Length: 204
Image 1 (cartoon, rainbow, N blue to C red):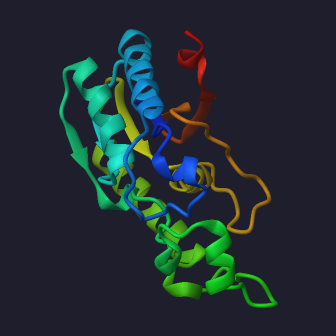
Image 2: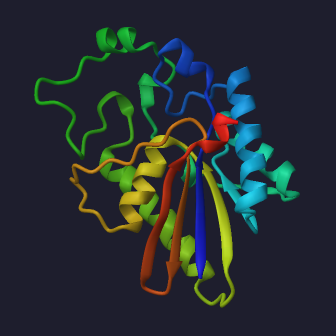
């Protein structure tokens, strides 16, 4: 049986400045650092993982490092866990982005690489590939193996869609707050969502 403990990073500087983040590599804010520490302590006490995989972008990497330090583990970084590649929008303030790169009148289509961004289809395929490789590598393990995945809101949503086999153009979206934590359990062909977007650690 495999458990995926999926964690979003803490608050980043881009959140405060209302910028398109995506592949822009902003640091955590002081509040984000505190959120990461609280999440790490909560995880170590309740759902200590056997390994940690993370996006190498600073906001996710720093959150993963806090968890690793608390759980006495190392972090393995995987570029497939990076946020949506938003191309020329990365780092721009949202008002500036609307002026410089206005959306076509038909809107953004699933195949569209507007503003040199990753298309929605490519983004979903990246999540599918990551999950397929991960589950294949774990399939012969008989004991419970818990993997902590530290990533970004968009990628976590795509991983959820991939795990649950939601259709590509689904109206269901998984919300994840700052250091929101999900637990997904896979036992053979059975998949169970144990909990979603836990943030009780932030209330301490």
